[in-house]
Length: 371
Image 1 (cartoon, rainbow, N blue to C red):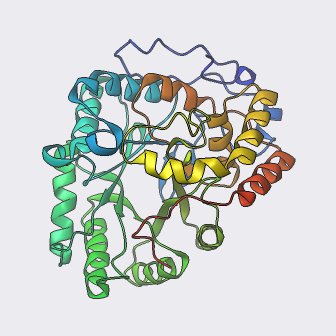
Image 2: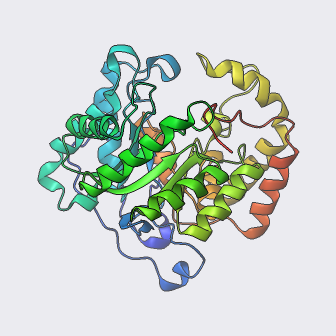
């Protein structure tokens, strides 16, 4: 599989078994290709506040999660190969959280990223070569700004870093503990002022609550750089689109998590072939109504010589977001890289969205999502 577009005259990817993770910059694509639209070439960068990041990042929710994703520590070598392969092909944004990992493996995602970065240290030339965006859980015992700053310092220890790229509030407590919310916001201000993070972001915020925190942080001299939300062809309701509009108006970059609908948009599953674990319950409810959307994805993918996953991710990029599909196997990295270097036409985007809107059931929204 070609990892980078032929139009860019890119060299073939280094075999996944290779451990070195030195970054490689392919020759620049022709100017005509760049005029097609947003810069989707993996070695080009877009801005999140002061940071320059790849137009797609990778999510690490599965790194340590046994319940939903079947993680085992025997997977660590392949996860390291995933990390190295992504870096070699221009991906520099990796999203994690201090809550990722189940049971005794809580925080495992951050620990693995720290290990992989450290073992690549000889070939990483600049802090911008690897940008970690981590999320701090709004646990009920984190009641003061100081406790939230301590959470940030604990993440830095696990990651073996002096500073995070983006420090994010994982969810809002506005729906159930509004008094806690202000302390968490003050924690973001404090970690930014102390230089523990280069940029500040939020996750699972709706448009109304986003406006509130943006205004509060601005009053403290802290720019809000990113908002992470579930965003895909299965999650394109009024709230998501309103949030995107608010982000655009305020200069906030929207990061799209679950761009493949937990795997429902890959075309790999149907009613007789469901994933193992808790996902199967959700898939059983939604998949039967996705025939039209999946057929549309398949048709466009075949026309473009792409996979359904690549088309679904490219749609997110065409909407001006930075998708962060999860990866836990080298083949996931290889496939997802194929979402870059080209773009859907406006007619194809409209066709996909019409099919998505016609689906009787959409993705269930995060229980912590606010208005």
